[in-house]
Length: 111
Length: 113
Image (cartoon, rainbow over all chains, first blue to last red; front, side, top):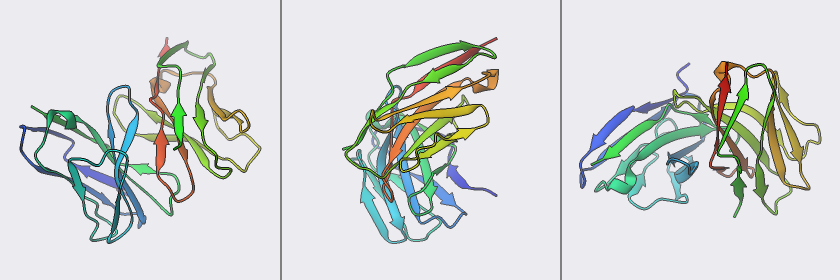
């Protein structure tokens, strides 16, 4: 019972580099989400998807892109990394907008 | 837009005692869900308790219970018989059906031996 799997767990990027954060769930959930967690700020929604082929912006989408080609996978792409993107990133999934199941998070540092 | 406010950035409690974490929210909706999530040092987000707004009865899960005051838009979490393993960040969250979850800034709880 894997639940929501995020990789990598830690990453250091240089300014201007790009990377993809991977997220996979095996619960057949239709809804998937990406959040970032900054100290003292709670979690802010970056992007979300209500099903394969459907994505939409959240509160803080600038500097990120997503795709949802399958029910299971929802990767988050960072283009031209900036220090402001230093954060902890969480992927989550739910069935029909119910309680979330979270991944274990990715700590990203941009230097 | 819905907002969630946790007015206590940090709290502490002695082991075996009871502590209450506060949460208020702002919404014009009548149907919604409220949650408390726990985030221990491992960083994992763990669902503690969930409340449906249409239910008058307060949710309970073992040592965890809530005081849901719909008219006051208040949703506090009570932890009874606090244990060292309860030390964590606690996040209050609000969600309209079929929408995303909105989180408060969190309360850092320390349980002291």
